[in-house]
Amino acid sequence: MKKVLFIFGTRPEIIKLAPVIKAADGEGLRAVVLHTGQHREIADEMLRLFQIHPDINLDVMRSNQTLFSLTSRILENFERVFNAEKYDMIVVQGDTTSAFLGALAGYYSKTPVAHVEAGLRSNDKFSPFPEEINRRLAGSLTDLHFPPTELSRKNLLKEGVNPKNIHVTGNTVIDALLWALKLPYEAPDALKPVFKSGKKIILVTSHRRESFGEPQRRVFKALLEIVEFVENSMVLFPVHPNPNVIKEVSEILKNHSRIHLCSPLGYLDFIHAMEKSELVLSDSGGVQEEAPSLKKPVLVLRDVTERPEGLDSGALKLVGTDDEKIFSEAVKLLTDKGAYAEMTKNPNPYGDGRASLRIIKSIKLFLDE
Ligand code: UD1
Ligand code: UDP
Image (tube, rainbow, N blue to C red; front, side, top):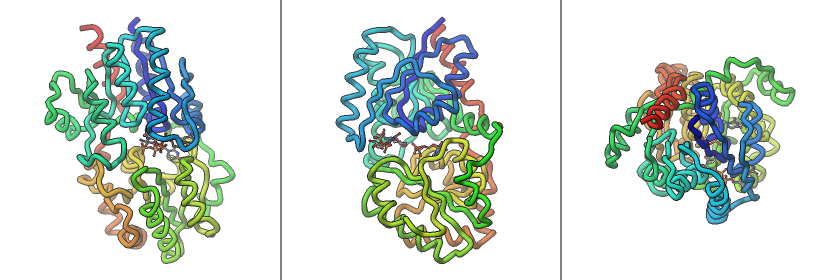
């Protein structure tokens, strides 16, 4: 049986690789799972839901880790792992430091690398930072590329990747979402008052490094102005555990009766919160891909996006971190049915829920050649 090493380290990588790992098991590959531990509690939550038990956990997370220290801790640990065992293929996902270093480890150990969610490009070196460069570096070390869309395939072709090694699959986040939506769900007591408030819920997430400081403060100021102006609205904000985010949130947003701050939500709670929301404000990559499936418009808290398909389909709108723009676009969506309908009328461009099986079939063909 061919041995495939899946490497992940953060919440979104687990969500997006979980269905691929399940598909590998069902298709006669031996899936070995390596968790760098770049994230801890928010990763554990996902591992529990998807019932993934990592074979190797490097447990590298430190509070407020820097890119330098995180990178060197992961790489140092990889040496031990790759000296101990040989794999037929390494699979990484997306654009995190764990993903880039997983691809680098594949190269150093002369193991073929498959990259899930390949080919996304913002064409801005510092936005998102460091993800734009992480995914380019991962891509340049990759043997088998799995772009989610036709546009991401074209990005890879422009960079000279051999078309034979590119397979468009859709994004595996939709596989995970469709699977999770079928599970039984009961809201926890902490969320019931929000879900039953009768208010229009604005679901917010914010964690990008390039927004820390002043840009993030502008976003939070806009949230205060929105809930003051639209009285039947309420913000639900699961706060990312990054200390930079927690600090600003606690200084600006606490103690407002219609701003509900909470710890990161488990995946089921989060997707059901999205389903119950009117509108999403987020700088998250995964959230931009999921929300169109639930017919929720997303105001993207970034100046550029590597996910332009959602802009083209109308489901996403870039508002950056300009408080006036965020305020006016959010108020428009909360009060103007026509504007709302425009953003929710088209199907999700990011996938059909069958990406994982396509990926595993291509990996098997590659390994059998
Ligand atoms: C990382 C990824 C980013 C991805 C995001 C998803 C990199 C460089 N960044 O950013 O691409 O969008 O994850 O969430 O790979 N922390 C905890 N507990 C946790 C997780 C994080 O306390 O379970 C805190 C720690 O203090 C940690 C900090 O958050 O040092 C930052 O985590 P890190 O993984 O370095 O960066 P993110 O900003 O989460
Ligand atoms: N998510 C979650 N709980 C939360 C916030 C997000 O389960 O409190 C999920 C969300 O559904 C999406 C993923 O986490 O699938 C996105 O992760 P994140 O925003 O941390 O990273 P990004 O996608 O920006 O890399």
